[in-house]
Length: 444
Image (cartoon, rainbow, N blue to C red; front, side, top):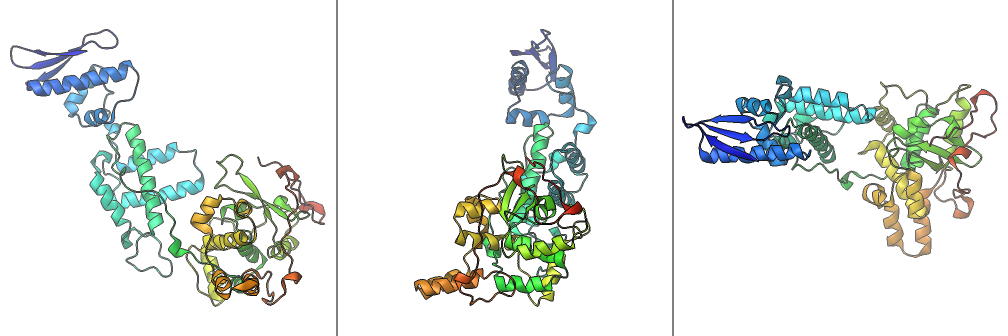
């Protein structure tokens, strides 16, 4: 498809037939035959890519990106590559700004997490650093830097000045960086992704598991400043709702008092077919908190939680204050461990698939991230026999605030579920009239 010609003065040229039938020439100057053969091979690769309308191979992209600017102009002049504009030499800051501007398809929380990664990339490399100058070795250095105190922006209680990001947080930042740079590769701004070899898979750090037992939960509920905070805590601990996304999305129209069910909308799983919503029982431990907030709600109120949903409200910080007020110490993964505690309880009382469905995850995810072995499990195993097992279960699952751990099982009500209800059946039908009541519309 291409040939090499040598002029009398010793200069060499590449001759080829372009897709439009023209016969352009690329002048190489005084180069060796070996160099000319290599360039001829690349010209044939480029012609093949153009004729068959297929993307360039990775090694060809790398070669084109590394072309001397003068040679790049010669190749662009004969239509083999796109002209290099000054703007095509992107800086890290410019690329990230343009990438974020294009990604209007992602949710606000995703953008928040991406911004954390952008801050860390710019803090380490600098906004003006050319993308193509960042090497795989420097990407590895950045990954190590994430484990130092310089990379941490906020310092919660218990963190030293030298503590870097948690392992899973660091991996998530690496995964985001890989995504940002892969976009540059796809736009032919880079020949290869310097972050490609780094591990970005988020694992399960079970060392930070913590089971919040009923006695602890009761103390925290007693220390809550108002009915809404008691409900927030109860929804996280006894309904296993994700906080804040599922909790703040809850409306009074989602409460089916007659059938004791909540319709939970999950932004986290909405992109999976059939997983945008789920039905959760109004458990006996949850109902008093929910009823009190309903009784105090303003006429016509739509949202269940009204006072703690503005952008300047930090639920984590406020819960830490409440825990200290209760005379307790906070635990890792503050809200996730509340959800994990409920997932563990439900899995011990109900079939695994039922417990997982109520929490809105698969049994595989529950086993990997949520289910825990509790002190009650050890007591049950060590005691042996039916009586010890019954006592352990009573201790672990005593219901309600102020309930005795010695109450006979026969006097305790187990949660009872009625038959499955369609989303369209979920109406607020607790005996409350007037303007607070709204019919449910389909959320599918």
